[in-house]
Image (cartoon, rainbow, N blue to C red; front, top):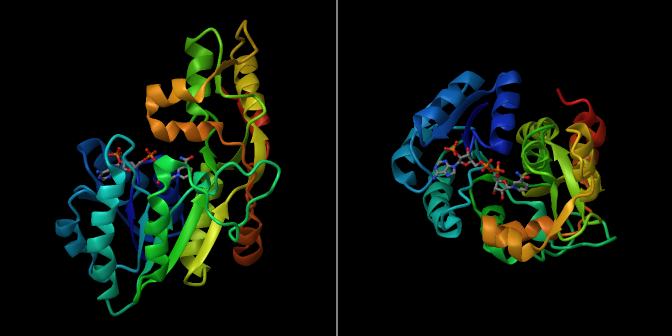
Length: 293
Ligand SMILES: NC(=O)c1ccc[n+]([C@@H]2O[C@H](COP(=O)([O-])OP(=O)(O)OC[C@H]3O[C@@H](n4cnc5c(N)ncnc54)[C@H](OP(=O)(O)O)[C@@H]3O)[C@@H](O)[C@H]2O)c1
């Protein structure tokens, strides 16, 4: 398939681009800088220089495209307004194509709120973190859009051994006297390794029924204290006890969106496993941290 990826250099998008190229799809990616264009080239994708905030020029390049994947996000701007404008231009343009292209929209685990011991599935009503509440009408709009095959994927917290949501732990284990944890060590995060999530995007692209939503969670809920302690141990920190910080501190440092780090969640990826044959391989993050080079 000929697939256009928005955000193909990000945590999620870069794994998705590499996976699609490996599966012999033809991948094009939007690049807002020379560095992003170079990265896409290294992955084997063709870079189109432009910006999601100005969609009209590059949407013209989409004639004959089989699918578009939206995984672009700018945490420093008014992403709600940027994405609204993007959907205003993109959805009608895709619907005008004769081949009914696929559109995969990236939602997220923080749209389900704090679930506590309940395990959230795709059937659970949304209870979004307020910084992401605008995403719910956007994904509902995508799912209702005529003339496209629409799919929504809700990734769990995406990690790589040193990257994604593990990156701050790895950095603090090297640079600070203790690793910081927001709110409590007992907070559970649903987790998925970037490569496993990329498999799910590829399966959804190739075989998901139109109108489907999938939660991309490989580990339902993993205590964040275990992650922090595994990094402190791996990097021989004198203080292996994490330093607990409040949600106000992390929100002041990174933005309101960062309050999501305190959500205690359990999310199930069973639907994707059952319907798409998704088989996540990375199920032991502590071992991956322990064996980091
Ligand atoms: N990571 C997670 O754990 C996680 C979990 C659940 C849901 N999500 C959702 O998944 C989506 C992607 O998250 P992520 O973690 O992969 O983000 P990320 O690592 O910050 O990557 C964002 C991507 O968007 C691109 N981008 C940002 N602004 C752009 C613009 N104006 N024009 C063109 N490209 C632009 C970036 O390109 P540059 O290379 O130029 O910066 C980058 O490729 C978000 O909606 C997020 O809420 C993420």
